[in-house]
Length: 311
Length: 311
Image (tube, rainbow over all chains, first blue to last red; front, top):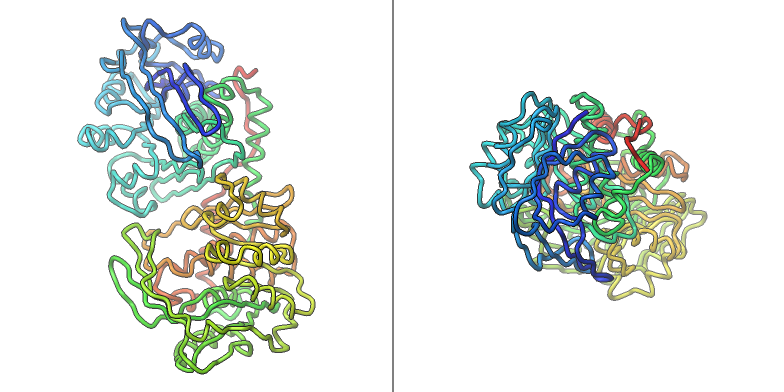
């Protein structure tokens, strides 16, 4: 099934305590589209500069990502550079150059307008709304966002939330947007802002899925050797939406499996720099990890048994 | 089945952003013994002063906790006072008075020596070892610990770890003891220190259970209205060991269920101050929450299905 993926496409320099790597493929849409490509037909919408290397473009092509919606504009590609600290959970941005991304105004080619599913990756909420408005008959749409938009474009974001089926954000962002320090209350508060589903991403602690009368908690797949955490949340969103598009259903059971697929794709992502591992998975890799992921949260759920001396 | 529970018994003053309460039952052994009492026969080993109120003692008695090992010494009971901040995850200690706890040297009455299971709650590791040495034929023992002992009694703690079946600690403590910032590596590193099982408690994010070739991740039960987080980790450990003692088995499947029971008991704990809710549960309360907990992590774990265009 066709899945529109819009977001940033960038070139990253990433430093970790052990290694520094330059000129890597990055950006929310890159991770999301490649993660989704194992399940659905992603149609990428984004912008790059004339300097965007053919080598990076070929990563998308090898994964069968449709690039009809990838605009090439005069100037340089969006660039980000960041450094991760000892625990690999915290990072600081060393530099950002928006370049062509600054004037990005996504206008969808016909093939993208016809997509049945859409992942509105992290860009300005007004642009996410602009993309949504061009789609013909979307069956299920999910938006991701970040703290920057919560602070600088809150009204735009609140308008967007009334139009999407699902919203996806980090735990700290969910707390910030809703003003609820308790994550479970924050998740419920997100639903009151419009969407039918809210996904709260907790990094190494997994994710929470909230729906009306529905709650699902899934852990993260344990990765012992994290090489580069960049893009894990985007790969989660891409795996999630790819899985929804493949299943062609949008009920709770479908979204639960989608969250598990999202966790699996996020785990592959952090095992290497950039998309090195994510873009080169075999069918067996994914199936084996799916099984391992399913096993690690599975237990004998039968009745609690006798309770002693209770009231 | 009989379960020895040793640890602190105290009187707490607790302040949260909404409320302040004084003269509450507290201490690691109190929470653990009462949580365990729904599954097994806890035999409490600890010390209180002559001022320990009959009202607090009756909380144990109503839950059928054996108090033969609770020493009453001249002087005042251990007192702790703390304050929780806005997000309810961080706290600061306002005051501590060890009082009779300072000279605590647990000498077990015969009934406690015969217990088949033991939860060595958070006290000095040398005292935990001293308790363990008095037991006749323990079938399964678990120790809890804290950052204080990692810093001030590391060698004692390492000696203890070679003697217990399981160790249980918070995520930050596991990182500190092992020097591994990655929690999955930290869990594996704990196993190399001696115990067959390591449980890493992550508060609102649940817990991880590590064994040789075994891994289990369980979320926390979502509590939207946290009144007082004190004792959640102790109730987890008590629920865990109570469940192990009731099941009379110590295989992986048993410990998985035990971790789920631990999460259920921790969730009840934080819903009120002190042990107010924990000490007054009905059989139906526990069974209903067990079912809700089982449901929230359950999903269609069948095969991953077709993977598209993989290598």
